[in-house]
Length: 287
Image (cartoon, rainbow, N blue to C red; front, top):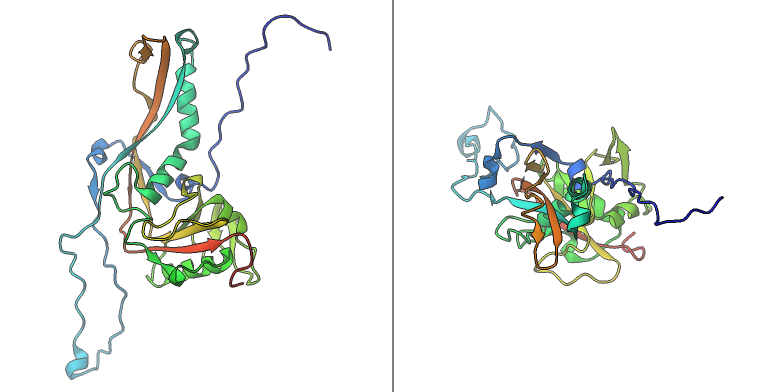
């Protein structure tokens, strides 16, 4: 190879890619042209109970049918949040064509991480229902189990509702599924990750890493949580936006420019099912 002189060639790095099994690639995402979701929403759930059998030939006390639960006004309320990603450089570099677009491309690949983290922890809007809050039903009395056994516990928690749900956890837990001796686990079906027995969607997202219920002990080494909920809807603004110009984004004190790519989100579910199980990834616990 012949030697050349001069500065190194300026090259684009590999384009950021969104994880295949992320939260946003698993649950229902609605690119909403109606931006009124930005004022929040109240979720009207469907009847949360289970159907009962009744004998049409019964008489007396046994002929009475039970009443449904009164929804009242205690309905889950959700407020929106904004996901953003900044990019900064000198004004000379930032003025180059396409510089600000880099933030938008990176956000498109990584936005699911921020949404999953907010769903798990409620950091931006702590008054929203979130997975780690005090309403979480902790399975197996908080005793850690292996990943496959945990999967079975979550499937039973979903099954007890009589309807379908979704399992949410970190990539490390997903990698540990199918590692037990029970032959129960997950598989890829129609492009999505699902449990092999019931076809329950499974989301593996980096935003769930380190999640732990607020009222529970701090995670130990090799521990992680997995969660089960009912169906989740994610409403978001249709496009990622760069909300400022070069002039507006320049810090005159040091001539640095910062662009921020942003997108608004509202994440909702009916909160009827909110279960979690502690998993030990370091060994065979309750195999």
